[in-house]
Image 1 (cartoon, helix red, strand yellow):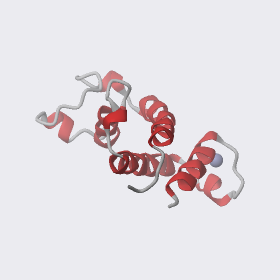
Image 2 (cartoon, rainbow, N blue to C red):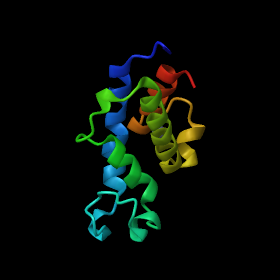
Image 3 (cartoon, rainbow, N blue to C red):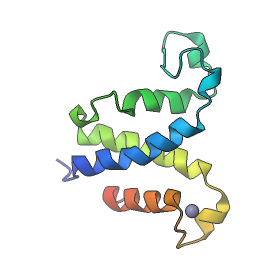
Length: 113
Ligand SMILES: [Zn+2]
């Protein structure tokens, strides 16, 4: 056991869930955001990463049944996503208070990465 608090990890998934959903262009998705791993359209979709993530972590998935390790992996993917959506302006400001930066700092503290 890594000693990480599962409920804390689950809570941290809430923010990227909202952000990723906002960033997705579901109007263009023939599956309304349900990833179909056998569909070439899904496999080649430019939203593939976001979509796969959502399908693993949205409210309909029993995230509490996942292991701490799995939740950690999903959080790290979300960190990459949020990180890449930030302009260098945020990253250069040590004390940026926007919700992206605040969330990233919280994840770093919890995961100690
Ligand atoms: Zn910021």
